[in-house]
Image 1 (tube, rainbow, N blue to C red):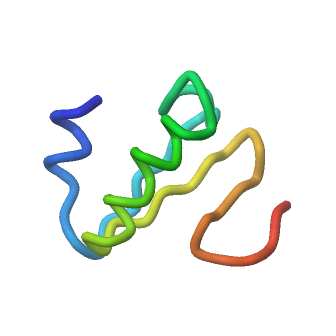
Image 2 (image 1 turned 90 degrees about the vertical axis):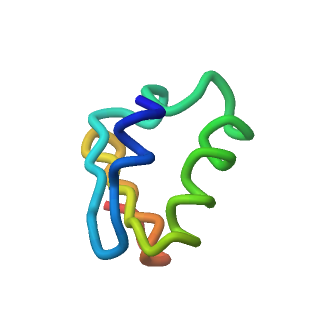
Length: 58
């Protein structure tokens, strides 16, 4: 997963099936998603309907 996230470039969107695939805790997930967003990589979660780029869920 780490190599994949390093490969993602600005403007890419990483689609993840479930939020628990990126970490064991909320802190783990945030520590994975935030650096990606700072690099211009978006992360979307399919099962939960979470798109960190927006303020809405669903």
